Every structure is written in C-alpha cells, then in structure tokens.
Image (cartoon, rainbow, N blue to C red; front, side, top):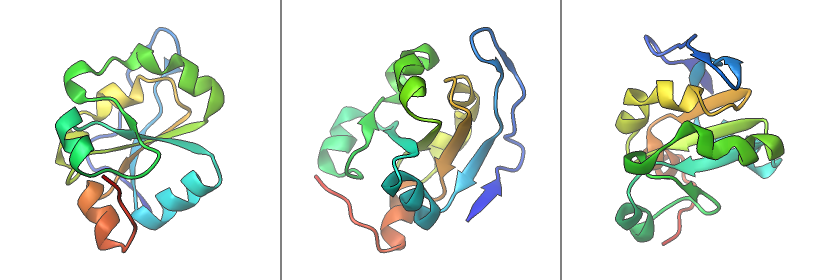
Length: 126
C-alpha cells in the first residue's frame, strides 16, 4: 500500500536536486518488497539507544537530532528510493520536508513506523 501523506506533499526547491519529490506513506509489505529487490535504502531516524534496543535489519541509523539531507549524496548514487521510519510514524510525519531534500527520486515514510512493521508480522532485530 502506498498512499499520499495528507498535507505533507512538498515541492520545495533543493539546490542540488531541483524540485523535491513528494513524500508518501508506504505500507510494510510494499516496503519489504522494495527492500528485497534492493531498490530502496531503509533509514531509521530514531536515536541510537532506540535503534540498539530494536530495529529493522539492514536499516541505516541517521537520528533526527543529527539529520542533514546532504549526508545522503552517496546513497542517492546507489539507490533510487529511501524509506524513513521511526517508532510509530509520528516523527517521520513531522519531518517529511527534511526527507524530501535528501536527493532521492522516491521518498517514503513507513506507515505506522516500527510498530506498523511488526503489526504486519515482519521481523526486527536488536
């Protein structure tokens, strides 16, 4: 499932990437498919202590407290899309404009965050 994030579409301009793509919510099953095909980078935006307790295997940790959109320039060269997640989806919903400026052609937030991932019956690791 992929759906528009109501009120969170962004069209701000990024000097390195032109017009930023819209940020959309993606369900756990669709996110898993993109990740399994190697088409997306998974980014955990929670703090390091949260990530250490539990995270989705393969996620890159980039806490919101240290988030800089330009830090993803190398990742954009390797992946077309990025999926950002937090615990419940609330933090990612509040920061979509930051994610849109990372330079990825497709930008997603995981619907329901880590909780939604687990609710879909998908595994996490510590």
